[in-house]
Length: 554
Image 1 (tube, helix red, strand yellow):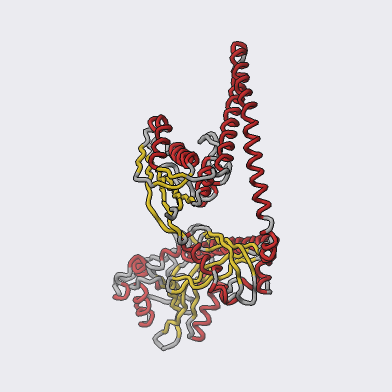
Image 2 (image 1 turned 180 degrees about the vertical axis):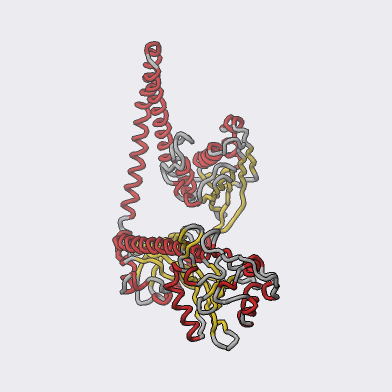
C-alpha cells in the first residue's frame, strides 16, 4: 500500500468511516489513476461517503481500473490475511480467483446500467491462507459519475456461508429421513400385503373396523382390513372394501346386533361373543360373532353356522341319548374313583413304610424321590376324593327339605375354624334365608366357597369374607341372591365362566394347591337346585360369587 506523505487536509466524507476511512485518508492517491483526493469527482466522494458510513457490507469498483473501495462492515469477509487491505488496488488484481465470474458481470453493469442480483451464490475466494468455499447474497448496481454516466459498480453483499451450510445440513438430514421414511413406508406396504395374504388363508370371515364418530357418538364403522372370506358376502375383494363404511356396503346391519354389540365392545373394551341371525341385505345367515377392541380399532370375526342351524332339529333327537351317556359316564367315574381309593391308599402307606425302613441308608436324592411319590399319591387321593364328591352332587336326592342356610354356614365355619384363625380372617355373615334344598350338597357348596376365599387371599392381607342375602328377580323368576364377597387376589373378568369348568386352574400348583374341581362342584349344586351362579372379580381387589337359588312358590 502506498503511504507516502500527503497534504494534511481533511475531507468531510472521509471523517469517521472506521478503519477503512483511516486507510483511505493515509493512502497516497496521487500515484494512482484517480489522482489526489482533492481531484476526485463529487459523485465518487458522495458514493464513498455513503459506503464508509453504512453498517451494511459494501464494496465499490470505480473507474477504468476498477479501483477497489470497501467499508468496515465488509472487512471480515476478506479474512485475517490474504487480500486486506485491498483499497486502491485494481479489481482484477484483488479477485483473480473469481474474475472469470465477476469480471463479465461488472462489465455488463458498466455497459448497460442494469443491476444484477444473486442469492446464496458459491464464489470460492482466497482468504485465511487458503482457498475457501464462500456463499454470498449480493447485488451489483451502477454507480453514476458527475456526467451522469456509469462510472463504477456498487456491490452490496452479505456472506451466507453459515446459513447455506446449515440449510444443506438440514436438507441432507431431511433427505436421509425422507429416504428412511420411504423405506419404512415400503416395508409397511410389504407387511400389509403379507398380512393380507395371511388373512386370506383363513376361511373364517374377519374384519378390522375403525369407528366413525359424529358429535362424539359412533354412527358407523370403516373397514381397515378384511379377508376374502368376509368380502365374499359382498361379492367383492378386500381391496375394494378398504376404507369404505360398513353401512354403505350392508345398510341393514344398523338394525342388528352386528352394529350394536360391536359399538358396545369398542366403548367398554370388553370382548363380546354372541349369536346372530342376519336376515338383511338379501342374506340369510346364522353366525357366532366375536368383537374385541384393539387400540382405536375393533376386530370382528365370526363363524357361519347356517348349515349347522338347519341340522339342529335332527340333533335334538340325539340330546336324550347324550344325556344318558353322560349319566353312565358319571356313574363310571364314581365307580372308578371308588376302586382307585384303596390302591392309592396302599401305595401311600407302603411307600411311607419303605421310606422308614430304608431311611438310614437313603441319600438326600433318594429321600426326595420318596417325598415326590408321597406328594403325588396325596394329590391323586385328593383328586379321587373330589371326583367322588362331584359324582355325588351329580345325583340329586329324591326329595328336598327345608334348610336354614344360616345354620348350615355356621357348621361350615366351625369346620374351617382352625384355617380361619391361622389366616387371621374375618367372616361377616348376614341374615340368611331358609330354602328348599339338599342338605349335604348345600353344606358342601358353602364349604367350597369359604375355603376358596381363604385359599386365594392376598399375601400379607388378612382375608375378609362377607356373606349376605337378598331377593331379586331374573327372567321373570324370584330368587334368593346369596353373595359371598372377599378381598382376595381376584382374577380377570374374562375367566368368570371358565373358573367353573372341571379341572380349571388359573394359577400353578406351586402357588395354590387344589384339583380344580371345587368350583365345578359349587356350580353343579346350584344347578341341582334350579339356580345359577355368577362371578365378578377384579385382580388385586377380590371376588364376588352370586348364587341365585329359586324361591319356591307356597
